[in-house]
Image 1 (cartoon, rainbow, N blue to C red):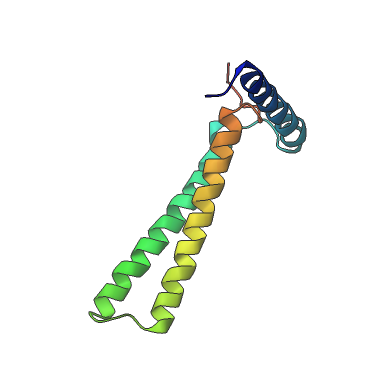
Image 2: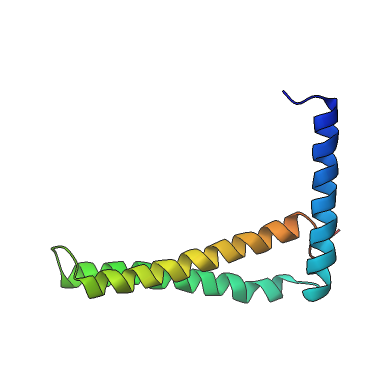
Length: 106
């Protein structure tokens, strides 16, 4: 269990992280609204759909092990989906931690 000095240092590190992230990110990304974020979420959702559709399409063509090309396409669609999902999560974290301003936020 961390001692008082360790806890104090961890609190200070969290404040520094919050301040530095806000100083760097906030000027670069304008104040966001729900409508600014909607296209980002829509893009990630479409990538998920593309990934799942590819899987279903492969299953309709082949009941055996998919071909190398089919697996390669599925992997590319998964990579796109996972990258966009991670980016949306990073945006959500940046908003949640106060690094970015949001219109209408209190």
